[in-house]
Image 1 (cartoon, rainbow, N blue to C red):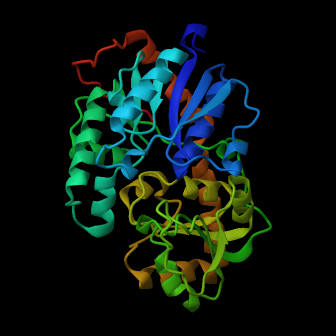
Image 2: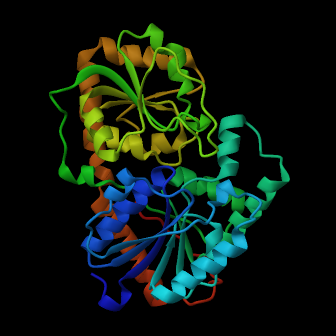
Length: 381
């Protein structure tokens, strides 16, 4: 365990998607190891269910701001204010490590070594979902700020090798990315396949995010003998309502505990995503003993090859046939449920925490205040 003078972490987070689950889970794990963690939120305020995720954790405190998330502010209109305000928080808290769950905030005048974690980026999202690069000038400015942030960070991390390689190609940062797979605490418990499984297909994701490709389930649900349930937010950050999905039971946005409860009953979890740098929800479903049907994307192959069925996310027929295959063959379905549970044990929160502790210790000992000029090679899995 690191000595006491290396135990203060400033970590940014947002409450829009999976980054909140990642950041709060990691922060809890760090606090259990004796670190003090201050979560600083950007973007929309966390809801009451999200705040319950961190209530009562010794050593964990929360600071909320009204600073814009970089993908909601591609022109960088709020950038100068954000860099000034965040640097001020850093001076006030005197952290030993700055752990950023974003890119451009690394350009602030930080007083400690900086890690930038690449959870996603608009450019790679756009290419995966729409087959082209974003053309508007504002996204060029966004790209320039992402590149500058990666260049200023002492280290940067990706949650999968597949996404690390995408970031390397798009932004050519001066240091090589380290890979630390995400983890969840449910994977630490050595779960088993539940006997309470019901004939239900479950999906979870933001209906307004075309990357989740939830609309494909609406097109095939009426041709499936089992009901299809979808959990997730239906309203985008700009309050634009999504097209309603026919023949699908919408569960709404659930707390993490409620979602895990639904997963314990579902027999199959399907994620037909067009873009997914890691996929925490699929990991949650695997821990709950769901058979996985996943889009044939490099990150899903990296994490779940041999433990899931993979389909072309743009081929509705292939998606329906894969689901029917599991519906009609109980033996195969139970086999994939058991494989998912076993594979999920690789992605325990304790392992993720330990890998970040190694990285923190390296930076605390070796990193200079200025950006290092040498390349760092290596990856942790």
